[in-house]
Every structure is written in structure tokens, then in C-alpha cells.
Image (tube, rainbow, N blue to C red; front, side, top):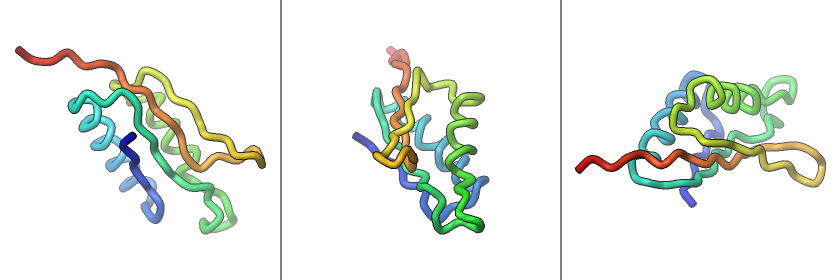
Length: 92
């Protein structure tokens, strides 16, 4: 399964990378991908802004997204999500 790791990126760069990755994977015919945004432990105040920004962006702008699910660990935290992509029609 293709994976995009967003560790170390700011919000704008992470959103741009996510947009590119999802579009490229959909065009390649991938149906499931994983996006890792981290838990935010290294962020100021220990709050991961990408944990909220990436899922919110995918919900609002993820034209290729069929559904998504956060990967919750045993402590109830998430640092990644699986994203299922819509099948895109192939051009003749």
C-alpha cells in the first residue's frame, strides 16, 4: 500500500503534498493509501495540527476520496489514516 509520510511538514506543505499524493495515486488506479501525519508530540504544546488539518482537508477537498478511517492506537490516539480512493475512469 502506498504511504505518504508528512512528518516535519507545516500545514501548507502537508496539504499540498496530500493533494498531489491522492491525485497521483487515484490516477495510478490505487484504491487504498495510508497517510501518516504523526501524533504531534514534537509540536509546540504537544498538539498535532496535522491530525486535524489533513482529515479536514480530505473531507472538504478530497474529490478522489471514497472514505477514510483514522488508525487509532491502544491509547486512543491516531497518527495516521487509511484512505480509500474512488475508481477513476480510464481514458480510451
